[in-house]
Length: 326
Image 1: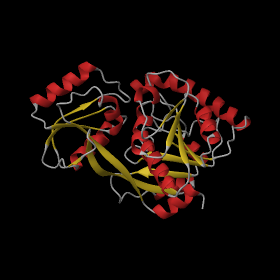
Image 2: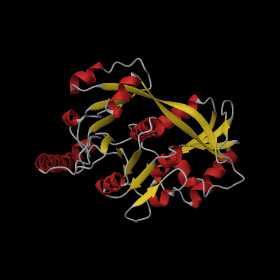
Image 3: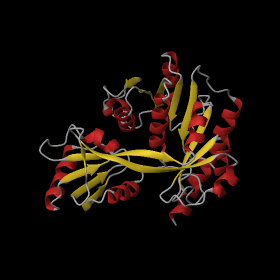
Image 4: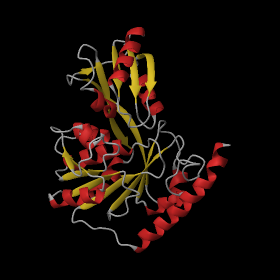
């Protein structure tokens, strides 16, 4: 019933999309001197793109390729036009939670944050970076890119195949033909993705998120197996984080979900502490994206940690050659 009621809005969205698509087929995109890699998606919700951005930046940096990230800083409270954050200097209120999480994870990689990602990319290019990764860049066609990578979640990649708001798609499935490669995040590595390759005619890679460690506010690694914990997160796909928490072997006292990019207030923290004490939880566990927003307002006498995630990609050598343009 809800889909039927929303269908008129979807029809309007569809019309606007096709006008937008036509516009960018006519208007040339902005070119920068650096190589540009876009990582994005065509569906709303968690598809693993930020994890993939971190993976690509890390691999390029390891290869001594000067790399920067351009991001919008979605829902950042501060309104400053341009912010550059890095491993030693990040403030989520200025740069946004995803950019802050990336900065904390990537030593030696700068994140350029601006509401206009093209402006951020131009600045990063002028600063001498060899490669610029555009976070959530598939729809940002104002900027010309050399490699377009689209992330897909294997659980429900296209929903009901309708555009917003009746469905979950930002663009029609046929827009994947603009992509140079697809990365499908899977829970089960035995899933067959050959149908996707036939659908889009592009290289398709499987990726899995894996637990690297569980880190405390003191940057110490701890083992959660057998420990009673309280989980919480404010991300697009909270069930994915819940499954990750289960995989640590922890005994989950409770799990609290907040909306994506949620801005935590003192009252939220007090409520979480109450639930921890009621459930006899030893520590609270969250994502890095949520940790950067709560670490400064979390009581020092209560334990808080985050799960550090990495990405494993099948046919990794082939993928590395692709991002390095070899």
